[in-house]
Amino acid sequence: MSVVKIYKKPELKKPTLVGGLPGSGYVAKLAVDHLVKELDAQLFGEIFSPAFPPQVLVKKDGTVELMRNELYWWRDGKSDTSLIVLTGNTQAVSPEGQYDIAEKVLDAAESFGVERMFTVAAFVIGERVEKPRVFATATEPRLLDDLKKHGTVPMKEGNIGGTNGLLFGLAKLRGIQGICLLGETSGYIIDAKSAQAVLEVLTEILGIRVDMSALENRAKETEDFLRRMQELEHREEQPQSKKGDRGLFYIG
Amino acid sequence: MPIKTWVREIREVELSQPVALVGSPGLRSVGLIAVDYLVKKLPCRLFLELYSGSFPAEYALTPSYIATPGFPGSGGVALKNGVPELPRVEFHSWRNRVIVIKGYQADFEGQYQVAETIIDHLHRLGTRRVVVLAAHGRGGEGVQCAATDKRILEEMAKQGIETGYEGPFFGLSGLILGMAMAKGIEGLALFGLTTPMPEDPETPDPATTKTLLGKVSELLNLSLDLSELKPKIEKKPTARKPEPGFSV
Image (cartoon, rainbow over all chains, first blue to last red; front, side):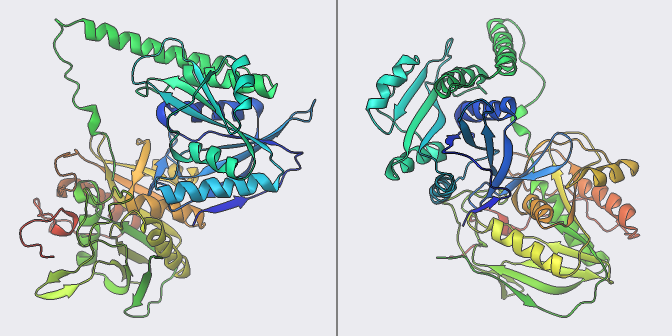
């Protein structure tokens, strides 16, 4: 069904898998994309699937790209730490596709000797979050105590949907140690602040340093936008916007 | 159960590095009307048909170009002058240099397979460029473009066609562009700028189609007579929810 194309097989010693595909608030994707960019991780594989949305993306420069998931690698020059990072511009839409991709990513990860993995996800609360908490859950209950030391809140019940959740669940079946970090978010905005909160915990656990300024700036832009929106809402005496229905922007 | 997609060859064709023009049911039916008109007016001859078990005769959800898992619609045939016709993709040729493809939207399970099969056949036929005819609804008038590489965009800019849309390009036409890129065929999308009609997104917009076809004619030197493009066109019922006259 889905096809994993490995362009180059990097030499990595028991790397850690980090996965974060787009989901609520783009928390996972923002966090993992930021990690890839700041570490200058290298693309080594791509995944294509008929379970991805049947569409292409037209980019800002007018060129197009297929829907895809990407695999990157990174190795620390000073320690044994190495990473395989899963990101992408989409998730599989159907459950069959989500299982298929999660299994294939884990197959690829195991071929590199991965014994530990993290997935990043969003914890949606449906209302504005001032200071996002990071929730954590793990394939082994004993790991939760360690995770508390990094300031996380144990998530003991609930569902983690999509490929991000399945990666974590299927890792458990394979005996791979798995930790899922979930950034608290309203679910209504693209939430860089939540992504930053998750990434701070993740990098602390991994023992790597990453410059957060790009995420901070993006979070600030969102905050400014929300503030402006709030101000507009408060001006009840103002007439309604005549800019038309922005929900009409689509293509076919 | 695996999806079956197959082709039926109607006649042999001899083509010399053709350009393929593709239009599918989509926003304001611009792509579809464009290829219908090209087939009639050039005129083209049908040479290949593509069928698929994932082509609904009746869509569970509309518009037809936004396929959703779990909503396959229903198979069936449409009657034309009392004769049954299966839903299909049609490959037509004009002289030895143009292929016109009239697309059909598959359900979620089949969209990628259909797009890939179409591109495989275009590859076999030596196609040098795929030009997808579609529309976007971000307002304005005229024609804008997107492409599989920047060189094509530069070429279009010299012809006065700029980029302007950023975001998803849904359905078969978008996927054909993506599959062309994946298989090493040049791909260009020409978007007529239209006004969306959310209550029925596939409501035909012949005026935008005319503008778009004018550019296509100019770019490919087709000398297309656009005077017969009707100002008002009724939408065909295949891309709609059940309505009176649709029997199951």
